[in-house]
Image 1: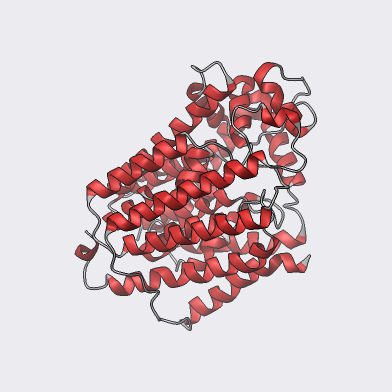
Image 2: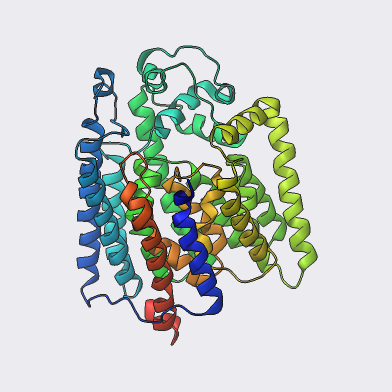
Length: 452
């Protein structure tokens, strides 16, 4: 079991090197190609990934007949030629991160960004397969409402019966916040079919991506950050094609960061709202309050107020049913095991230091997803976005996360047989992620105008 700590051990070693300043300053080179070339490379590699997901979802062993009737095929754990599929998927993710690094260093026109964003959105909305079953659960929750907290054992009918078949029993516990149930009901209210609801979730994810770009612009981030967000196939894959709901809370926290200086009360309120979508985000959003300096009292009072508000409103909106869902979620995910305690403790410590106005480490980007409470080696790839609020005030940290995101998440697609990738690719992703922004900071130290 200790071998499962290899990725976190790599992070801890990097953290020590990062704190001591002992890491190499040699640059990762990228050819001087046209931004159109890099955008085209991203689109092609993303298309390959989507086709690989389609193959993996339709070539499971054994492939049960009901899986063939799913509106959108979803990955199964055992796949024909799974090691080759996972290797190709990871190589494509590495190519995407390399292309994003080149774009981060380049002048990229709005035309290229807009064209690439539009193409990636269309590809994601029409993606022929899912890498997780979450979209089906969201569609079910849009109908079941907060009854999904209790996972009442009532067999589902019609299109939704596929959910019972997937789990082998009626019902599935969902531990999302009360506000999320309102949002998902509104998003999926119009379509009547399961396929229609999944497509509605994807379109909503595309709108969230566009809104995130607007929020990042309002925050005053340089254009290069908008470029590597808009043209980021990892983000598109996780939050449009697979429609994971974490982007809702990420958008809200980003808006909090954009308004916090002008209105601390509004910023604190938005962090609390993010916690009502997914409760960990009230903790993940605390580093946003670090800009309230030298008014430390305002910062700490605001943090406490956000946490208290989330707990009170969550209880009023969910009561014991929501608490039972959270407890069940933590229990089945083995969050209480000693194997998981250390990375969670260090992740919380990193957030606390950032909240207090201290140094933020690139290494912490890869620790923070552990707060999701999932036992190793099951680390959900979309949880890597949980580090965005931590790095949003430090360009070097945020740049590492965004550029490395496609590669790092490709190494964590748990439905593919990635034993070799778990021990090799994840530590490598951490190393690459660290070296990436160090070069960028050096390259752009002469002025922000170099990036547009």
